[in-house]
Length: 294
Image (cartoon, rainbow, N blue to C red; front, side):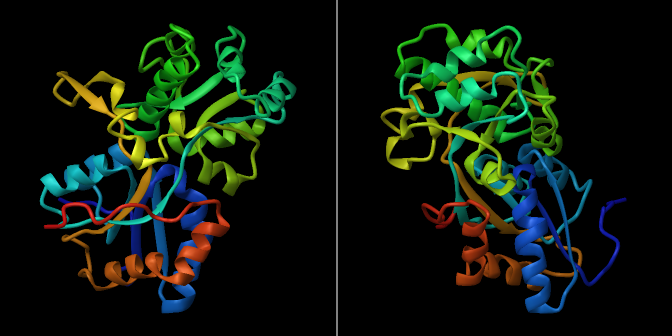
């Protein structure tokens, strides 16, 4: 039996990448509810994990909003969507806790251009938080960023020194709770998207385009020079490559009450009003075109 975490039949049901919690639940959701006189309900989780739950019919929703094309490809393969449209974009940053023991050093590093932040992250007493690369695109993206930083700053071995194993249990956190732990000082620094840390008003270190995965023009000649292997659900090693940090939205074919309301919500995200909300929460404009367009 298909289960849904939603209770009310007339609601707009939105699942989304966990980093989007504030913009969805405090911005777009309430704004849509007011405009449409409809109840909004949302759930955030690592985008790959959420896509798999949707594809396996373990949860149901009207709309899915993901970062990077990868999670959308899971739903396309499951024949739950025909297209996914870009609605916003962002870049990778290193967020740090204003309460952390190295807060002053991170602030100093944010003003430097020599990669000193890498040496800070490599300190043995630093608690660096990130998400699981199997479950969450951001967990993959920070690995790509650190591999690119190693090349860009000519600091061989620094990525491994920071990360340990790719799925290091001492670093990986659930998407929804990572920034909360950073805010409270339980985590000294964390892999993050600029959009989410601006939404949370947290300090961060901005990274150059060569590292932050924000520039599609750099994909083929630079970003794609790094890759790594990760195990899939069958335990097989799969090589993964970076993808542009664009947020995509799709209406699910098995939406509990039909696709009309889902289409309305996606159109709202693309509208001038929706884009204004995205901007207010620290998101950049969408880039590129529709996925899977013929």
